[in-house]
Image: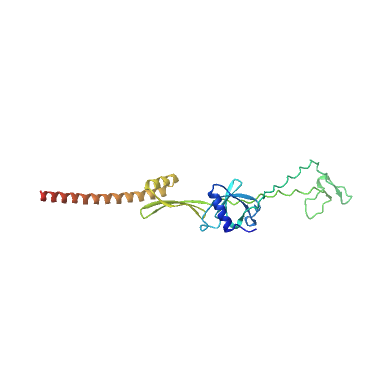
Length: 230
């Protein structure tokens, strides 16, 4: 079964824009959930990663590639397997004992525990039941990474889930950065941030002192020019 075409992707995008969630059907490329239906909830940037179509399946929202999905035919519905009839309880059959030789033996030695010695008494037991089939394998959600960085006098924070950028790095205040680090309860990291803030504070104070000195010099010059013109 072919995946979604460019025209079908455009139709899905228009349906999402109208506030509706279009239905799609999983192809053989999606694995064990092939033939099941889901709802498209979001389209990401195709250039960021291959699986850029977010589909709600059951209670999970998972990423898929266009080749994993197709438009379901009209009137298609997911067929649920008919429930197996519950058999009436039947008493287990009693073991059938087969005497190999006529030599009398004790009951506790009827079945040999040594595989090299042939058993003198054997029993036919019912075959074990097959284990129940496992459900469809669901892809786990991608990992989330939040990055706090300090570069060229600016603090930035960003977030990435898998290969998708949830929040591009944006500038925050130094107090906000210190607050985030204090929540981590990592003394070494917190001390490093405090050292950076102390260095910035000292540099700002030195710059302010220089500006105050230049301002005082300019005011003195203005006063001198005012006295000369009087």
